[in-house]
Amino acid sequence: MMISTDPQDQPVVPDLSGDPYGYFAHMRRTAPVWRGTLMESDLMPAELKSSENWTLFDFESVFNAFRADEVFASEMYNQTIGLIFGPTILGMHGKQHHDHRSLVAKAFRQSALAQWEPEVIDPICDQLVDEFVNDGHADLVKAVTFEFPTRVTAALLGLPQEDLEMFRRLSFDLISIMDDIEAGFNASVQLGAYFQDQVDQRRSKMTDDVIGDLVAAEIDGEKLTDEAIISFLRLLLPAGLETTYRSSGNLLYLLLTHPDQLDAVRRDRDLIPAAIEEGIRYETPLVLVARNTTRDVEMHGMTIPEGAAITLCMGSANRDEKRWADPDKFDIHRPRRAHISFAGGIHSCLGMHLARVETKAMLNSLFDRVTDLRLMPSEDSQIVGMPFRSPGSLPVTFRPLQDS
Ligand code: HEM
Image (cartoon, rainbow, N blue to C red):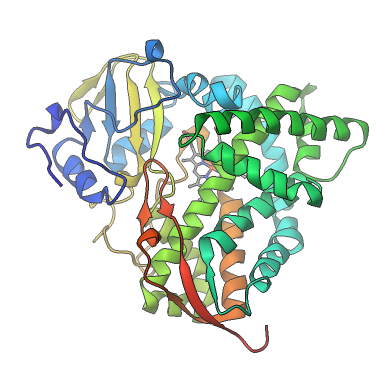
């Protein structure tokens, strides 16, 4: 990888879709706060793009920016993903964000999660693995990592079983919007109409599911509008489904390529939480998020001006050598320190506990049913992509366990 020796004046960023971590380490060392961008959004109209672009690479800067939400705001999401999803929680701030988050958080409360785990999530993962357990081989991306968060999301929302196929197709088109904007936009419109219908049904007859909870949620007489519910439901596809599908693919790839650690987790399931966190630290499914500055701000002796477009590079922050010893090593046994993949501050991930529970269930279902899991050689099974990263396929062989 060719890297300029003058990092503050580096016009060309190397291709980061392969292994970006050497470049990130170079930037942390030489320009942790850098005037430049890794994020080219085709979605934002050219006239709204800022001429000032800055990227933060080290853990401390990214962490502080997440917490300083008055200065590092997120309103620019209204001009990017907001154009497709409608106004979402991600682009809100202050009281509006607080009130909206309090309402939607009711649907994702701990007590609901405790009920979903045994009643919805575990059975879905068990059934999924049962569908291919006797084949002796599978592509885990197709058979498991895309499928379990899709089925879990559909079930938690309370969508009818017969709509699953359509929901799967539209979800895929929506999260692939950067590859095919037209198909993504059409999927967004169709999902909007479909979710509206689901909301209407619950207004006449309430159901016990996430859409029902969103319809019923009320604080101090305030309720969510239909538009807010539908935008939120659309957002759940990239925010909840895509991230979980990619992070579980990354974890499976990392375990399969570190067989001693795979074996350790399989034998001692208490290691699953540590494996999940290390997988998300080492290969975060979402590498970059955006912010915009609302005033001039000093960082690492640099002045970032008001109105700048900011990239927070979580993928780099998670490998910061000031926070983790040997950060480029995947090690589920390392002393636990919180990573930054679930962001921080007011926009910290609302679904992090759900993502953890789903991933744990997926691993348990797999380990309960198969043994001798081995990754077959394949060009497509590397972890790639920017800003989302995961393997394209995970072809494996295995033996079914006798008592499954
Ligand atoms: C490994 C899986 C996941 C990762 C790495 C992840 C990561 C993130 C990140 C980085 C943000 C902040 C984005 C920003 O501020 O620009 C975020 C916010 C959010 N996430 Fe997740 N997420 C995951 C799973 C989920 C799941 C399963 C759900 C729900 C079903 C979810 C729902 C949300 C929502 C609603 C927000 C917006 C919160 C707000 O703006 O207040 N996420 N997530």
